[in-house]
Every structure is written in structure tokens, then in C-alpha cells.
Length: 151
Image 1: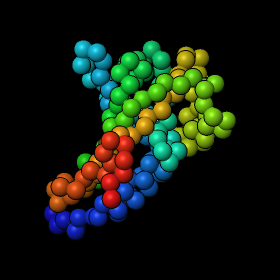
Image 2: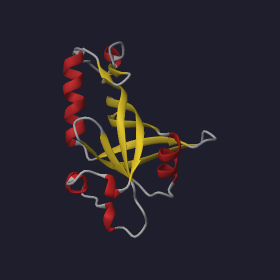
Image 3: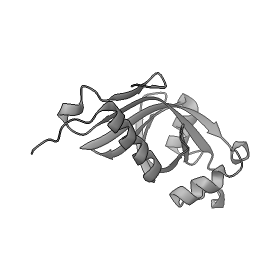
């Protein structure tokens, strides 16, 4: 398979941000206190600074997000991947800014407020972002470290 030339850091950042704006679902990886991993797809919304997710309070992912305050998100395919590691804050619907719930539902097509079981929201603040397509992009895959975009 022929590889295209590696993208610049700026192009990778633009591509990652475009994915954050347009994708609807993301793979969410968490672990419990014993290290038992959990991987599920969840709908999300990117607000330009972080991601808003929602899942059941008593489901493994909801429990893990609330307990650890850490998460890894995986976007795209194995040949065009964006990985995000972030910190997590659990929020009840009343704690969100006006319009945030509606924006989340409009983007994702999922409105947790219509469910009978409690579905809190989780705000993910990225601290580390990587993006690559092929082996020739591995060396420059870091886009963000310690919550700061790299140039």
C-alpha cells in the first residue's frame, strides 16, 4: 500500500478538530479501581474546548468515569485515528449551562433527559491528544500535551 506524505502538525490538528465537530460517537475507555477495563461507544458533543458525554450513573462506564476522573477516547479508524486522554467532571443536568443539553441532543440525536434511569453528563477536558494515519506519522503524533496544543 502506498503511503501519502505525512501531514504537518497544523494539518493534523485541523483534521482532529474537524472530526470532533462532525463525529457523533466515540469509543470510551475506562477502568475500575481493580483495573478491569471497559470500552463502549457513546455519543458526544465537542464545544471547542472539551467533550460532553452522557451515560447511566450505575453502568460500569458511568461508575468508572465518576470514580477515576480519567478517560481515553478513540476517534476514527485504525488508519486515521485520534486518541484523547482527558480528565472528567460529572455534572447533573441542572449544572449545565443553558442550551447545553439541547445542543448535545441536537448534535448526537440522543436526549438522556427522556430516560427513566439517571444519566448524568460527563465533561472531558483533553490533556493529551495524538493523531496519525500511517507509520510515517507516528513520530509527530502528539498534538496536545499537558492540556496545551503543540505548534
